[in-house]
Amino acid sequence: MGGRKQSGQDEPGGKGGVVLEARRSKVRPPRLYKVLLLNDDFTPMDFVVVVLEKFFGMNRERATVVMLAVHREGKGICGVYSRDLAATKVEQVVAFARQHQHPLACVMEEN
Image (cartoon, rainbow, N blue to C red; front, side, top):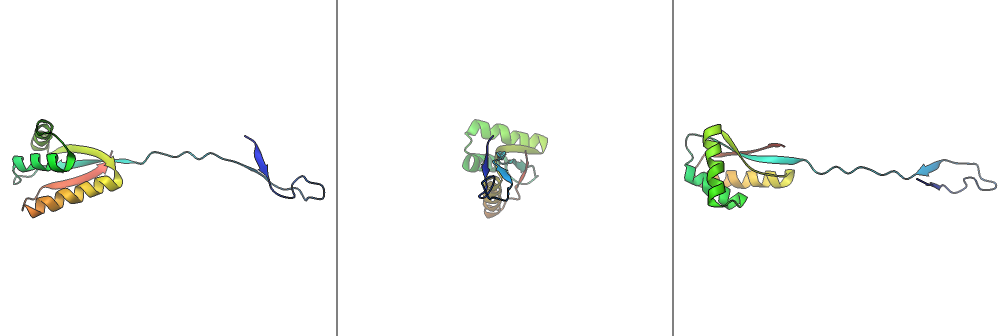
């Protein structure tokens, strides 16, 4: 790549100078985070399905599959999002669960 010259550089009467070279910076894609629901012994399965439909746009069939994963495996993946969006989803789900007096836990972890 060619460089740009500073003023006074390599010109008659100039003192010489430093050649500045343009550099390309590598932009990394943003880190992604999984939003997970955690199993508990008190939140009804139907409520978990409603949460998955309402906040994660799942249809009833997909929501039921994720709910069963939460029930059987202790946690289930609701989706993968940028950090801010994942944090917002977690806050919305937790607030909704508390509003309905359920202890449903929703967390995020780096993908």
